[in-house]
Image (cartoon, rainbow, N blue to C red):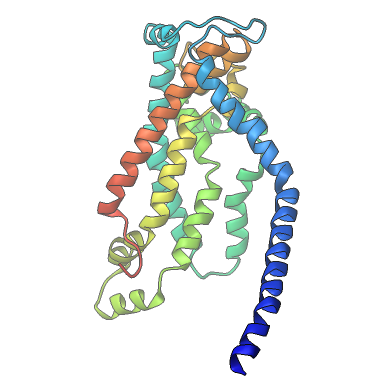
Length: 314
C-alpha cells in the first residue's frame, strides 16, 4: 500500500519540478531581457573597442584611413619619442607627490572631521563641496586664484613680504600648482576615510586611555592600523587616477602642455595623438603601455599590502 502511494506521488512531483524549472527559466529570460541594454552597451562600447585597440596598436590606423599592419613599429617609435618620455616623467612626478600627500592630508582632515563638536556636518559639507565642481570650472577658478599679479595667493604672500611665483606660467611651479589644485578636490577620499574612522571600535580607544596612551599614541597605534584597509583602497584608486591625469591640465593649457612641456601629461599626449594628429594606432599602443604599467603597479601594491594592511579579526 505504501509503495502504491509513493508510486502515485512521483508523476505529480515530476510535474511540479518541471513547472518550477520552467518558471525559473522564464525568470532568467526576463532578467536577461531587462539587463540586455546594459549587456549590449558593455559589449559594444567597452569590450569591442578594447579588443580592437589591441589590433590597432599594431597598425597605422587613423580615423580617416584604415591603415596597414606595421607590427611593433608603433612601440619602437614610442621608445624614440621625446614627448612620450616627457609625458611619462610629468605623470610620475605628479603621482609620486600627489598620492602620498592625498593620503596624509585626507587622513588628517578625516580625523579632524571625526571630532564631536557642534556644526561638524557643516564642516564636512564644506570639504566635500569641491568634488561636485566640474574640472573645467575648477581650472577657471584656479587660473584666477593663481594669477601672478592679481591672484589671491600671491596677494596674500605679498602681505607677509614674500614675492609669489608665476605658478601656472612657470615651468618650475606649474606641476606643484596642479598638485595643490588636485588636493583641493580630495573630498571623496576624505569621506571614505571618515567612514573608516567611524568603524573603529570605541573599546580600543577606551582601553588605550586606561593604559595611559596620549592622543598621538592612540592615532599611531590604533587609528592608523585600523584604517589601513581604507588607505590601501585609496592608494590603489589614487594611483590609477593620477596616472590618468587629463582634465585639469588639458583645461588649463588647451592641450598644449604649456609652459614649455611641464604640463604635458601622458594621457594628454595620448589624446592628442588619437584625436588631433589622427594617429589612432600610435595612441592605442600608448594606451596599452599605460594599462600594463598600471596593472604591474597595482599587483605590486596588492602583494606588499599583506605586510602593512590589517583587517579586524585577523
